[in-house]
Amino acid sequence: MLRLTNLSKTYRTGDKALNDVSFEVHKGQIIGLIGPSGAGKSTLIRCINRLVEPTGGEVRLGEVNLVTLGKSDLRRQRRRIGMIFQEYALVERLSVMENVLSGRLGYVPFWRSWLRRFEGHDIQRAYELLDRVGLLQHADKRADALSGGQRQRVGIARALMQDPDLLLVDEPTASLDPKTSRQIMRLLTEICSERGLPAIVNIHDVPLAQHFMQRIIGLRAGTVVFDGVAEALDETVLTEIYGAEDWNALRPETPAEPARAPVEVPA
Image (tube, rainbow, N blue to C red; front, side, top):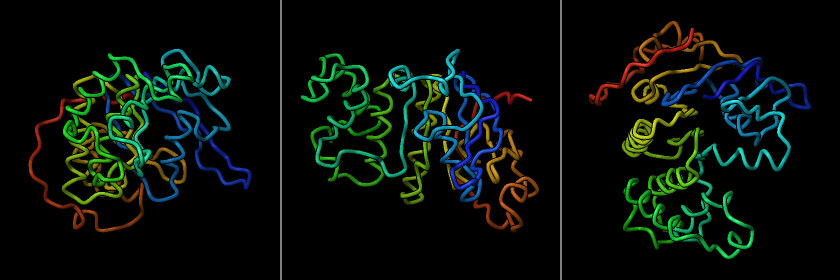
């Protein structure tokens, strides 16, 4: 379980990006993090694994408070947190297989990582994950030869190579067309469901979040202003998060998806 308690981030300029953010993420929960630009969504994602250093509060993954860890202990704990980036963060000149195997770098000695030498079971695992994300036939292709949707699938496979306890996903569909965005979101939710893997997905597309996420957390000016099931995102709530707009007119009709399992949201 992930527990955030009064998590805060204030920059040297005095700007407060996060203001006493508290919530829990339980096993298998998939949370959509929404809010306007500048609300603190990406900062929140990055404070969890300390790519951005919090200025207050706690981030507990299981019993470990990540905020207090030194560099070596933090490196070990980061193995437990898979990260999927908006801009993919692949090494373009390397093959798809090599990029996926880089998810094991936190587990191998430095000389193996330098020479990119991996154990046979890691290589077999990488092939299995590439098959799961639909890229097995592209294993030897360079990353820069892939489409945006394919690159994001490589990023998903790489994160899963860590065998993580938590998945952090930062705007996975921002650079993708609508059809590919739905395919990526469907893949993410299916994989998390299969593995009982909790995930926090920073997503700017509200209808996509409503369609695929079990639970939604809305941020405004670094503060949680909504935490509930996707079905509760009515016009009043969206106005509180984003400001006034004709939200019903902006809500597109979408084809039916398999029903999501019900989820309990902590009070």
